[in-house]
Image 1 (spheres, rainbow over the protein chains, first blue to last red):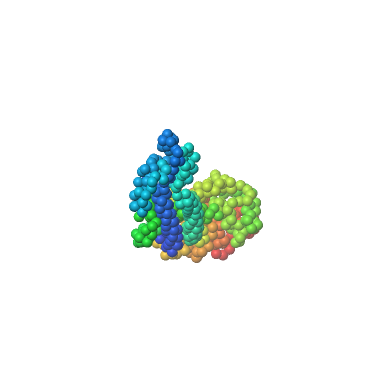
Image 2: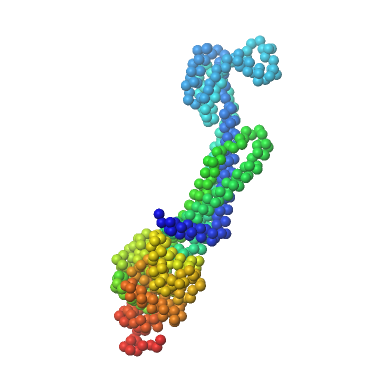
Length: 293
Length: 236
């Protein structure tokens, strides 16, 4: 390894980086803003998705059996449910137990002693593994012989699933827009630094430096812009979360928000990678365009 | 070393800069290209280091078919050539040493070779004692010597000079001319485009005269003005 070569290269990168401070600040600021918006969006989306999933997790399907269903039919239904891979658990609740549960749940508000006979049918209490499977599982169960009626929070499930889908689509659109705008601004910034160094580039070309070699410092510059921008954004995001999130949790107790709905390390890695990718891509494009002409 | 056959250059705007040029320059030759501004001297040099591409004809430089050279092979060609300009083209934020070393470093030269080669060429051009100075601390002649050192640092077989003395006073012009001659004596082929009559007439080397993109005369020991010679030296 030729340490002198490495030293020369690094000193060139640093020299260029520190020379156009104003432009670097612009580029870094743009990346930072983009990454803050992106991070904010990813965080909120994760929080909402998390809250939605928890609601969905609590949803269970009650499959009420026909009053004239035989124990054999009930057993057959139980076997069938146990075999379905989409179902996490299926518990048989005989009418007696159902009445007892009703009694505890209503805490005596309904005087079950007054009932001359148990009006509740036997039922299966079913939990599915994935929220998306609530609807199809309910449809399957409804067709089974001996099943009278299937009850679950249809509307809630459908709305939550629809919301999730909208969030995902809007999110991808927004992210693409952010990244696009940031890339344009950074590539313009880099183009200015390329222009500021056109003499140097001309001399490099004159003495026979390859385009790859000429391009490399600019790519590193873009990489640094992206990296620093992403780190600034992460600091801002972490500060904002520490300051605001506890208050938000307090203000919205009915929304089931978790303190940290995403793995912070994963999110940080994603954001840093995005920042670096924006910087590298933008500089690659703008230098490439300059060298071709 | 340099061979042009039927070379023409028409710029995209329709200007015919060179028209059916044929020229042979041998190894170790010293050649002046003379003519008025805009007659195609610079264009001819630009073709040789592939800053421009000919629209017709065949160009061979040090065995390389320059007119057919693929874009990604151009750096390899330029490492065989040294080019010097009227405006020096030095980097103002680098010292003389750094400017000269830069030409080696950006071609990926080994540091060991840089450390050996840079002092050698600085010594050749007589700038060893000013290697730590910046270009704007030097006189024009010294700047041009630094530029020549940079052009020579990769040991080119050919040195192309486009108006090397255009910005210099007579004393510095003489120094630079002497330096070019010394470089030529070491075996480097030197091609100088100039309209400095004094330089041409004093050196009495091969003179190729261009007019409107064509070679009008090619004399072995020529003068700047056609028809001079046989003792009628124009006063310098």
